[in-house]
Length: 74
Image (cartoon, rainbow, N blue to C red):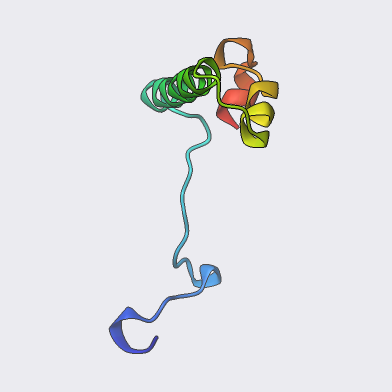
């Protein structure tokens, strides 16, 4: 694209995502909630009796309560 909406290069400090060194308590809580919601969906689908490869792979992953903090937030 050209003109006013031309993307800039990262080397010129454009389109640069600035992530803080530490995650805030709110962000951590949102991550935990999202992981718990995913665990709930996986368990609901498993209880419904559906069998598929994606579900088998999802059941092999650790739940939010079993994960270390390093695994949750990185």
